[in-house]
Length: 394
Image (cartoon, rainbow, N blue to C red):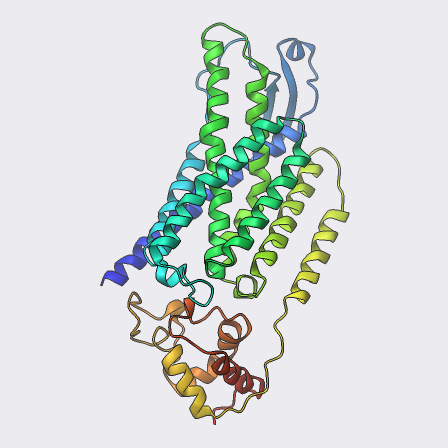
């Protein structure tokens, strides 16, 4: 019953995380599009009132006219809509999901003793410490480099996350390493909103309430972090779905695969941002598609090594290494039902699941999760040879 309740808790939190994430990323996409698509105001009175750009749009059966001021309007409007809770709830629900899924089961989902023999509490402590560490590194870079050295900042962040991914690949399982890097990026995004964007907007509002002209630098700082968040969105979305694709996090150079995909994702985001300002650079999506294809070829699994097999031996390996979780009634603690409904507790089920066994246990080696049951290289080779022979039932 405890495992059943845990699954429901994960489901609800994941659902909230997905809903709020959609709202936040959608707002990011829209406002960056809006900001980059603005045209000079057509009416002189608008320009005289401080309007720096405007945009007309049609949606949902109606026309919309959006205007942006260089700093602020002469009179503070009421109501004034703020966008913050989407970011806060996305981070809170994401951290809650980390707690109930990864931290509460760190020995299963974070620790892989074939990578590093660390205690679960050490894995959790490192994960928690890295969240503010990533933010501090990024925030200090932004403060020291200012608003005009974005390329230097981007290069530094690429090197930073590559170093973090490489380091964590020697500590965590591949799946946990990906999630940790994604959590660090998500933390930077949410804390950008909390510590920089919202305070900057409050200063603009406070200045107007005090009858003063707000300093433009506050808006510029907020815009810088908002644009950074926009480039982080597609990389974070990849990490959110990466757990379903062991061909990435299960590779022996998983950290390098992660860095490559994050760069491709940010590159694609750049295509859309350029298009918002009227520049359609088709070389970007074409280049991203070619890079993705080359990556897929580069990380393709090697052919299974030759090994002697019998179906009886295959059954034995699956029974002691896989079926403890993947059975109608799992024997492994913490599992109320077989993960993803995938069972391997009968000969017919083993034959039917041969392709998934190859993907998870032979090609990517991510199963058994954290190698809890201690599957050996020789056993993986036996399974691979059986599958290469066509996975016959005898």
